Each structure stands twice: as structure tokens, then as C-alpha cells.
Length: 165
Image 1: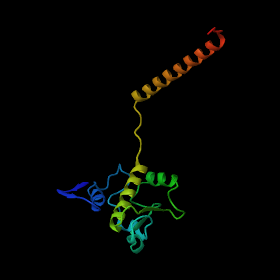
Image 2 (image 1 turned 180 degrees about the horizontal axis):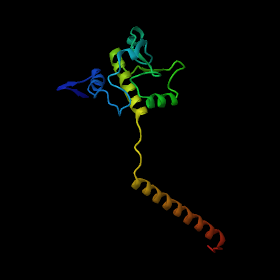
Image 3 (image 1 turned 90 degrees about the horizontal axis):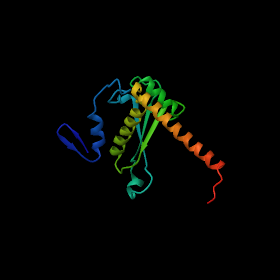
Image 4 (image 1 turned 135 degrees about the vertical axis):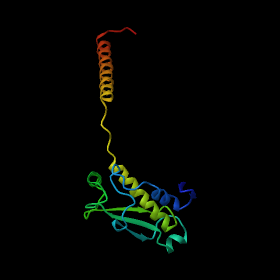
């Protein structure tokens, strides 16, 4: 559950409220938020799975289609990362589907949350390791190597010895 101002938001509006409560235009993030309305398009179709007559009568499954290549609101490094991961179709569109709910608006909000998570994942840049971290890694690698050598010496020693058990 999330908070929007002082009003507590529950149910299908919670993911959308969480999206709206985020800060806007963070350069470190790798994309601007909220997403420009012209940059994505929803389409709806019949959902599969359980749900009784509701799935037979209503178009509750949501598909979010976003043009990623050439998007000005996404950084170049994020676009490159998404392109490398083979998530785009041949025209440069990313399609995200959601059918977890019986409600169309809940599925729309969930698609936007998935898009935000995907953009966060692909815009992350790992920090450069410090000199102390590099020194610690080298020390740990040397200790592993020394332990492996010790095991190999013991194996050879035991092969050469003739034990009477």
C-alpha cells in the first residue's frame, strides 16, 4: 500500500499512486517520469485463465506498447541496454502485457509499474570499486589460490604414501 499525500490509497489505484508519487526528471535515473502520454499506447484484449464469465465478456488483459528506439525521454545508455537484451521487436517497440487482475484499469497500472521497473533495471550503472575493495578482492583471491594449492599438495602426498590401513 502506498501513500499519496495524506490519503491512504488501496486496491487497484495503489500501483498508479506509487508511480505518481515518485520524483520527476531524475537525470541519474536514465529516463524522465512521468512518462510522456504520446510515448505509449494501451491495447486491450480478452484475458485467459480463471475468472468465470468475466474473462469471456470483458477485455481485461492490457498490453502496453512503447517506442523505445529514438525516445527522447530515455537516456542513450538505457536504450542501448534494452536493445542489447533483445526485448524489442523489429520496429523498436517494447510490449508489456498484464492480465493478473479482473479489472482493466488495474492491469493498465500494473503495466506502467512493470515499465518503470524495467527502465530502472536497465538504467542502473554499477559504481566503480574503490581501491580498498580492489585490494580486498585481490587478498581473497590469493587466499583461495593458496587453499587450492594446499589441497593439491595433500592429494599428491597421499598418492605417494603407502598406507597400511
